[in-house]
Length: 160
Image (tube, rainbow, N blue to C red; front, side, top):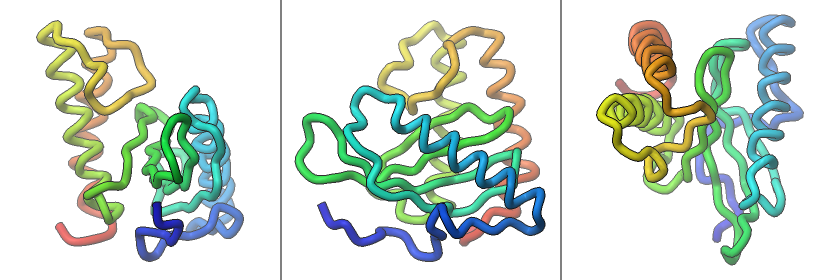
């Protein structure tokens, strides 16, 4: 796979700068958590490099990682969603070539996950969330989706 960064306007993790010192510190903590999150999966052989696409310190951040995946030749680019009350998840870049497209897919994936859990359907083929498929978590996910749609998405970089 091509090792060139497939997305414009991302910042290497070592160069993260927020709107102020507190935002910077929170984004750096989220970057470290997202790196550990990717490395915690058995399919991750190595994390090659990472970038911040966008974020609000302590709320939600979107990272881009180049990862060597067990059983696959070459490397893959993954989006990683990390936040405070937001379920962590990853998504292969594929056709989600901008942070906004990835974020919209994340929101759609949260909705799809909540619908499946409510209907008693399996979630293993849906966006992989780091939460248990319980009705209590469905309520949390739906609240998260509402907040993301009302507060975060309107201020998210890229075309609406």
